[in-house]
Length: 268
Image 1 (cartoon, rainbow, N blue to C red):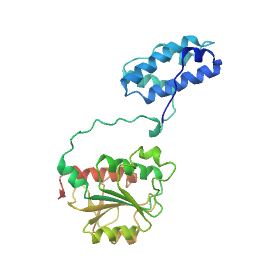
Image 2: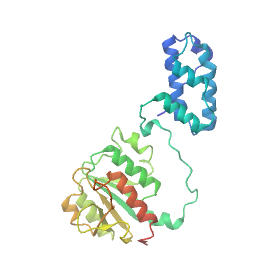
Image 3: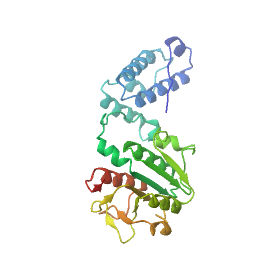
Image 4: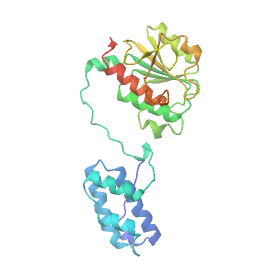
């Protein structure tokens, strides 16, 4: 989400009162989006406090109280803005997520391992889950993401809302058949791991992962197609202690990939 809410005092004074309220709400929304940027945060606070005395009528009490007492500390400001918004939930695309805090010089061995990992999405239905796979693949520098069957591709109109710019940074391709994707990688020397609750299987925390490898994740409702499962070299699962027997597919893939990368059981 990008905002362009900027108002001179002269322009703001010419607004109707309703338009002034809308303008202030836009600035408050932009302020929440830019919380992590100190310069933009302070600039927006200054603009809000400069403009609100110019309103043609008394502001609603909650808005007036918030703008009069905007804290400069970002965490106190986050709580104040959240209280003002009430139960309104924001999507990831409406939040300026932190970037750039990772290791600026990643371990070369980790990069080399990640390049040998492929993720295969077997008929995922949710663009949210596919977008999340792009994000985890980008975070870990995964070698390739293969989207199969009905899995949405970056051309989907809602992909940008969940992938958040990572589709341009992750090598990917689309194949109609997951079976073809698995056979292609097996012929290239990859060991194929299915992330599934089927038996026989081993916990991802007890499995040994041989590179190069592919991790297959399956449809949200049906799991991995049995025909695809039969082609995999090993089935791994995430242990659970609660009533549900599995996590959301993109969450499960994230946990498994971090274990493969940093769990100490991945053989180069």
